[in-house]
Picture 1 (cartoon, rainbow, N blue to C red):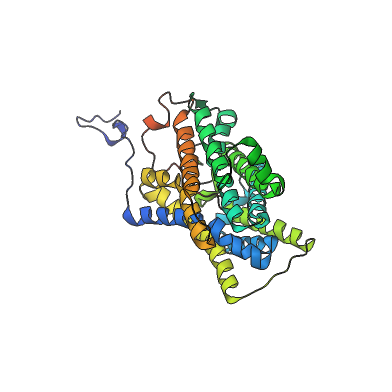
Picture 2 (tube, rainbow, N blue to C red; picture 1 turned 45 degrees about the vertical axis):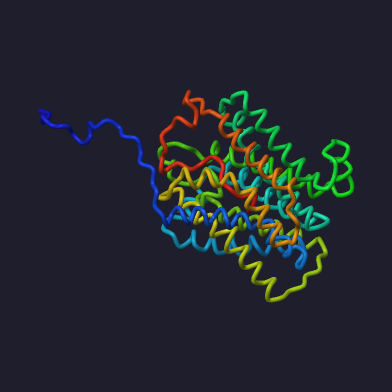
Length: 358
């Protein structure tokens, strides 16, 4: 006979909305991860100048990959769980991850000057808008009429950033990139590739109850097969380096810069972001993430000695505003109210993570 109870039973409680974590230290780590990623473009350019594009990129990802895999290996079941992830996630998303890293560093290294490096960095920051646009096709998300204006504003920001000191006409844009179109094409290809990766990682890695906390939906969230992808990127870059002659000039400053990029933006930033998503103020950190293009451009200009004129400030603002508008226009098909109306889930990760970096 079933026991009766005159009071409310713990198992029969109405579901309560999850509490939003607001831990100060974890939130601070999330902000630190954004700052780490904001240094990627600016700090990588001198390394490509001193070591060569492929050498610098391979060194960064080799440091991050070796340490990341070592940490994964010492965690109970860590490496085993990673290699047991779905094959299409490991190989399909892994290939997209490697392609993105290659395109990013080719864009940075092939830019004819430091001012152009800032420009290709801004092109690369089209990835948040691309991610949201592709989520409509790949994840079945619903989009409002504001998606198109959001994309247009973001693209307009990139065009304005490339038009510094020149006309904002289509002819002027073509003339600007005609002689050195490769870095811009690489940056754009990287942005689109990351858009595919971000969506397919959610689709292929699984989102059931058993995988919800596995942090495998986005490699920038510090879980799943990220260390394997980092090491694979290093392997591909090192292989390419064998067939490309590059002149490398080592110094203590160059070695320190390489170590910082490998340990900071390429590795520690993921750990900080994951900690913030688990126990920090998710809304605050995720909202600040949309300002990464502006943060990155300011840091890049300061570090590379590039003047940041009014057009570039406005261009950054447009890229940020376009991404935010795209985000506001996307709705989950299972929720008619859209992402704005759902209670925050402290275990869930934002669909778009900050970077434009590794």
